[in-house]
Image 1 (cartoon, rainbow, N blue to C red):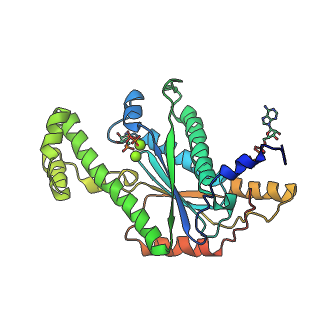
Image 2: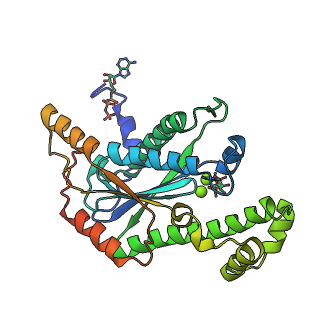
Image 3: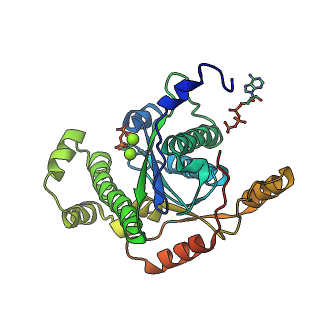
Length: 275
Ligand code: ATP
Ligand code: ATP
Ligand code: MG
Ligand code: MG
């Protein structure tokens, strides 16, 4: 089709390249997962298998989309950060977003078949995700972004844990549980859980309270420049063999976490070809 008279239509494509030397974060979020979780009978407030399915899907993204060095997930969302100097797809937003979200969805569906053998997906009710790309200009705004998502996880999880305890153990109707929680602060919810149900919120699983962080054990695989087939095979093998750790730590307060992550990010060369 090169040089055909139709080629001018390419001029209608807009240039959506993201700014250089910024941290590109792509966040995917499940579409209508409130309904999806009902349809597939997720345990409330937290279905462990469903969270593991999200983590598997995110691992698939880290292994298959170059230059993702860190990911954070909670509920039906996952955020992926690219190395600051990535040149993947010439940093074009639409290419990056669509590649991340389709890789995530494909891996989610595959992981589902492994994790839920007795709860197969209904072809009329499949999981789908949207995605957005945001650029963060410096380390502080990147840290604040993750703190925002982790604080969101904490607030929602404390609310959901209290709400579902009132319904499941306190025999309240969902409407009454909701009414009881209107205007309550964190301390009030902790108190309801502890005094009425003997539950110490601090003892809830870390994954539920903090979400999941995925990071390479050692970020030492560099995408080769203009790779030959042999170099590409070698690169793929190194990614396949590299270990990804799942952490549930506090990324809001933990300075050491960020020092470690960013030191690795700094040393990883990014010479991704443009295509
Ligand atoms: P939208 O399409 O606007 O994102 P949504 O229904 O997906 O709408 P969210 O705000 O993204 O709404 O919330 C996701 C919902 O999915 C949660 O409120 C919760 O009900 C459900 N959910 C997600 N993961 C789990 C899980 N592991 N266990 C139980 N419920 C979950
Ligand atoms: P990129 O990731 O840059 O899109 P690509 O390998 O997908 O790279 P495309 O330009 O999208 O390259 O071309 C798709 C290629 O897939 C075709 O050149 C052809 O080799 C192959 N292909 C796609 N559909 C079919 C099909 N139905 N039968 C045989 N080959 C196909
Ligand atoms: Mg959603
Ligand atoms: Mg969500």
